[in-house]
Length: 492
Image 1 (spheres, rainbow, N blue to C red):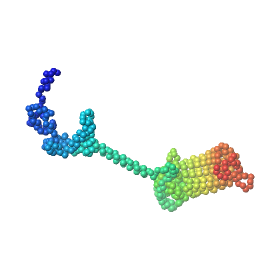
Image 2 (image 1 turned 45 degrees about the vertical axis):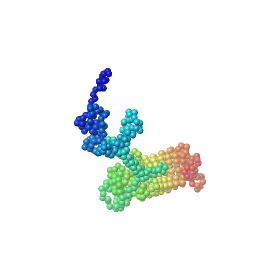
Image 3 (image 1 turned 30 degrees about the vertical axis):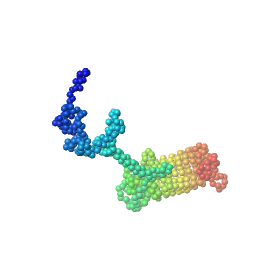
Image 4 (image 1 turned 30 degrees about the horizontal axis):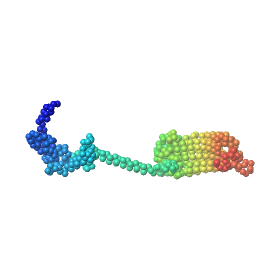
């Protein structure tokens, strides 16, 4: 570029622009846009932009000149009263922001805020923060919330909702823990068996206290089904106050379960009812859950069912319930019972007919009752491994059926009145015997060698009343200790 060209550009007349326009050419809107509040006086067409008088802008305009849109654009919520070109108290917000921004600029960047390229952004963030601290929510002239305050309101509501949800959840957990606290068992304490809930018995005495026939369809249908099964007879049901009739009346009118005649377990339920009514109706058994309005397997801990089906009775644990009398024959329908514990009662018979057909019986506990004769258990002893009949009043010889107990491992006939010699077959026919207790009886003679030989095989405990057979008037069994007998006159 030549010097002539530079001179030509420098000396070229400048474009007048908005500030050199005449009063007629500048409208109120143009003055508002370019910050010119008063008409521009042109002096010899040489007034430049830098020399033009600076007007305050929209804040110096009259209320008539500032429309609602203009006030919204420049952040003026109400018409601004102008007193000597000074901003009134209505614009405290803008003035506070401007002052805070100026101070913030000097404090943060020094006297030259442009030294950092992000200074404007930092200042704007700080001003917004200060503004939010001064005014919680900022509304425009139309009553709408500014976007930044919408975010603040949304976050606040979210936090409050979160706190409420957490509080409710904690309260529910606390209530749940409080309700279950009473159900928690101390792990150091033994847990007692859970008893079935007891339902107050229904009065069914009207059903069996009369010789008249009970005219009821349900009663009649159940009766005919049980007669057809062979458990009981029409004569037994017709006899008033018989345990069979009481059991049928309970099944028809007193049982809360109300099973139908076609139920496959009607015989099982009826048989357990006969056990209660035939043995003097012990209240202790009833209060423990017997004859409750639940399925028989729920009559715990007295009744247990097999794991496979969960509905067939396999164990009867009725020890110490003051059962009196003889076991009912109807129990024979419980053909899959493996464990029967009737110890510590007042029973005196009926075991033979009650256990007929129990081919899977393994344990039979009859200790501490009032049996006077040994039950005939020929049919069931082949499967029995544990037999205890101690503590009764059984007299006579040691029963022969024991010779068929080839699987017997535990035999206790102590504390009875057995007499005569010990049969030699007991050693040869009981190869699996581990414990044999025969003390506190009236046995005599000498311990068979076949039994002594078991001491070298499986027999660990052998107890008998020891004595000298040659001495007259001295009862007892000649048995060498410890070569044959492990102890005399008692348990090990």
